Length: 503
Image (cartoon, rainbow, N blue to C red; front, side, top):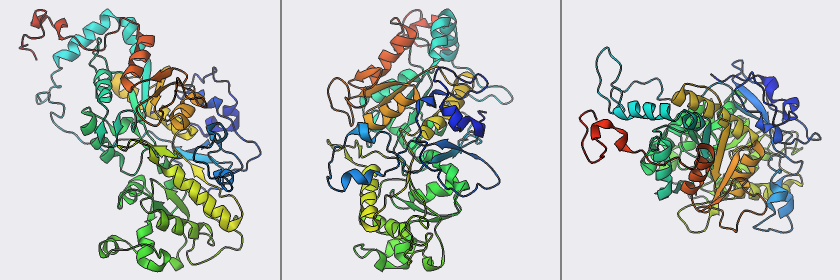
């Protein structure tokens, strides 16, 4: 299990040179390239519960909210260079889970889950492919060692899929990384997405079907996955975004104790959202209470809003209230304001529509502008997701755990490649964390030779397959073959067309 010490994430750690890793810890110190603003004050979060199952990672931040640059000029394309370190207006720490994340399916046994015959009292029969792959790897030990020392982190939307539609090269990449290669070896890879809105199990099941490859919760990070640590800090929370009540389900699985969604509030007082048509079905499935008698401790925007007008109205009401009690107006909009967390900051996201659509970052900027217009002060907020340090620290843990599952070594590979389509999140975060970054043209980025503000350091590629092939050639050599050759099986007598009795 990967362990952390709170001291590892202090300011001193941030000043460690990137080329000076801590030998006693499996966690990469590449986060040293992140910078902090010493003038910012610390985020005032309540003390944790006695479980102490969270650590706090310094956040990228600036003293000003994004709204300031929009108040007089609502430009749709602000300079990314100016915005790249303007993620969190708190002098904030972002809590992430301390302990190794366990799959909810990891403790369940499924006989013959992988199709292998079951022999009572004996281990499963090892497939011929595994035996042959082991022999091939023994013939090419240096190449096999290099394959175990590299890994990939994939963005999903715009890289592997467009919404629910497969990008064909995405399937081929996963086939190859899951063993359809010269060595028959599995090359570690994780999925690091600013997507959100569903429980991890539901999302990985959906992705497995689309990509026609297994995707485990053990290798999957959504933008709000690290936010499970916030359950230790807050009791009553408003959870916003997503379809239906799925984000409430996510929050329940994360361990939040008292979860409110906007529909609960509208059911209690429909006048709070005068433009909302609230159906009887929605009312029947909501959980109203007297919100004039309870305080909400924090606001969690887990996913994209499906109703900007209602969600913004309720959030602004809470931000202007006395310590999170609806129906009140605080005398001081700063000292009595409850905190608000966003799971990611992307302004645009690729979908099945040919032009990228507005994402959670656009909702946040609109909310900031509205709040400043009403109060005259900037909205302090915390943003998770790429390119935040917390997301990459959590990715380290997931990578190390996945390495243990695949190769029996709980460590972080030295050569990690981030493949993404969004320069403002995928590439910025990977560059600052010291990863090799690959920009693909199948999503948000449609520019020239490279992005001018946030260039990918490994290169720009037409699709994910070309990016992965270039990385493998660099690490494994030009002779590395991207398909498994069944003719290595002597039973086939040199012909893959001959059936094998062993198989």
